[in-house]
Image 1 (spheres, rainbow, N blue to C red):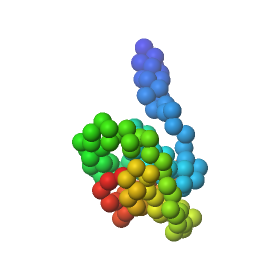
Image 2 (cartoon, rainbow, N blue to C red):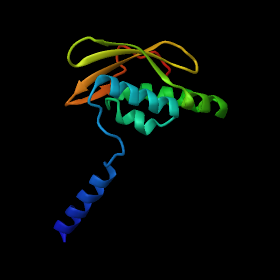
Image 3 (cartoon, helix red, strand yellow):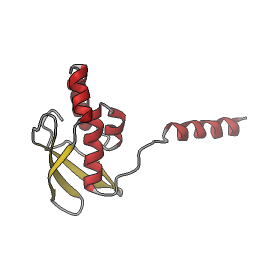
Length: 132
C-alpha cells in the first residue's frame, strides 16, 4: 500500500510540473518569451522563463501588480504590442543583456538573461527597472 501511495504521489507531482512552454535555447528566445508573457499578462509564462529566487519573484510580483492596475484597454494594447529588440549584448557565453522596447509605449528597457543548466532565464538582479 505504501508503494502504491508513493507511486501515485510521484505521478501527481510529475503531472503538476508539466508545462506548455519549451525551454529557451538562446538568450534572445528566453528574453523574448519572458517579455511576451509580461506584456500579455501571462505571468505563469513569465515565471517559467525566469530564475526562481526570492528577489526575482518579488520583482515579478511588482510587475504583475502594475499590470493588474492598468485598464482593460491598456492591457489589450500591451498584449497586441510587438517586442522590438534594440540590441542583444553578449557579456559572456552565459550572460546577455537585451535592450528592448514594445510598439505600444516605446519605452526602452533592459533585461539580463543567463544560461543556467542549459536554459536561458531572466534574472532581474542588477538590471531591474520596475516595469515592462
